[in-house]
Length: 229
Length: 229
DNA sequence: CGATCTGTTGAGACGAATCAATGATCGTGG
DNA sequence: CCACGATCATTGATTCGTCTCAACAGATCG
Image 1 (cartoon, rainbow over the protein chains, first blue to last red):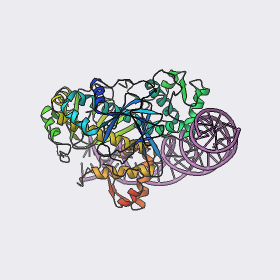
Image 2: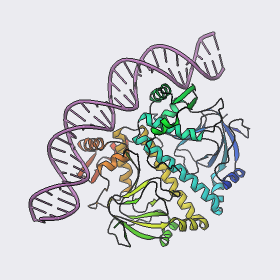
Image 3: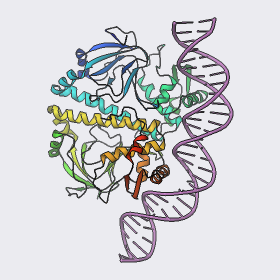
Image 4: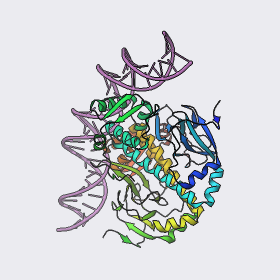
């Protein structure tokens, strides 16, 4: 079965962090649960829905014909998905863990946006912050060394991941991190283990990265314009 | 003098390609002319204005503390600038050539967006297409070879540049292309000249790149999801 | 408890960066 | 209008970082 509808979820709790009106969107859609590695939508396919992540982790990526993969973003509860899409999805979205999403018909969302300028503002804000992340990502991919990339990644997702030290701590596997950072899995492994030897991080389990020395990571964060908003 | 106001411009003509209502924005602002290499705004500075390019070329970039530079996008007449910014600019914008921009107070634009949902839709569309470009750019920076990057760049900006073969054809210098593609200037030069030897392009002048064999470039374009919308 | 992913580690190859020198082009002022 | 300096582009030699290939170790899961 491709997807199961209206199932409840025991994953990390839903954080309504993305504004007031956006939470009202909930009435427009249904809750869908995806299994690990299940595709939510594929690049090139029609885009009749947009989504909000309620629980679990999602990766958004683009592929080359020969299988090269670039992960564009990792999404967690509260994050919006595919609100920028046109009629066709230009990226693929997959559940990394068991994931719960609110799925809303684009037509109904668009109709609501036509009459609710406050909601439209919130959506614009969300698109803008996605764009900002994409621009930081471009500097990382274009100009940073492997070590700097890993440091930036850890700082970004240490901020985002809640403190909750659940068994399912960090749903990205090494290859996901590599494909987000534009590196090979082996290089990510090497850098992480080198950082472990330097006591900057600890790797208690393959899915769990604990930051021990945040200052060292920040020293590797070479971005100008620190106030990352 | 830092900038000259209300000057007329003889650069490529203004293309009102970005929608109906957006052109109405014109009444909100003033026209400003920037000299080549002049900064329009800097990363980290307050963002009281947003802009629309009327003539000339603009580059948007992010810097590292040590001077490494990543160009995020090149803008041409019709393109919007800084509509996604919050209170602070997170990127720098510079004129590449002599450039004419419409400068609009963000407060007035936001006020208009609160009551004009159609304009808001057009802005949202513009942000979405920027996001799409940023995502293609991420795949390029993270996963493509130097040759593939140059080919993608040529295809992208061959589409964007009008046929107009003006003396000031292509305002990007080699280092701009390099900083957009995440390469060194030398590598860009080597790839371009290798393509010239293969009769894929011609380089009649350093500022002018003419595509002779588009099919060969497209063969190097390894992106999946061809329908780039 | 084996089978299959996932992660680690090493050796070697390769692509692009860097460093360096020269040549072309542009802009400016004499 | 030409000469000059400054910027930009080309090309070569070398270095360096990361990828690839390969073997193995550990986890995870039926």
